[in-house]
Length: 173
Image (cartoon, rainbow, N blue to C red):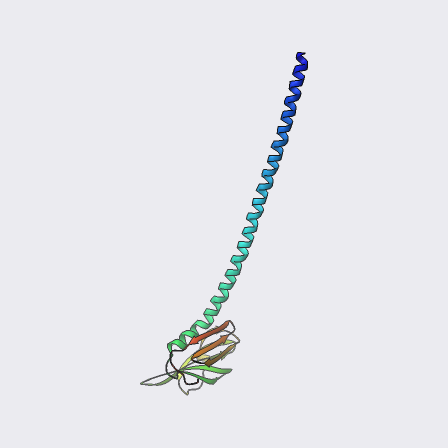
């Protein structure tokens, strides 16, 4: 009877341990699955974040290129903004944006135009011939267009368009 009792106790304890092992095994599998899901979600978040960051950097680089091209033109226009200071003339490769300024010594022009794939700026006496070899390169661009309407000067280059509000009336540049 004692051995029967021992066998029964052993059978119960072995079945109890067997059930516990199944419970522990299921909990371990669930923990591993949950951990895997968290890792996958984290990796997806990193991929989405890196992609978003890449898009922002690309957008910022385009904006920087636009500013680098249009910034000097905008600055020249603002520096020379005066009564009837914006004019158009025939440049070496199309229209030139001419910013006219006068002082006691004479009338000067800041000429901005396209020449050999670059937007250049030349400072010269009014009515003097164009000298693109002496001009300062502002930016590389195959496009330089401008228009004037209601005291707004629109300047378009290969990297974008700037709208410049003029403070002084131009009387139809």
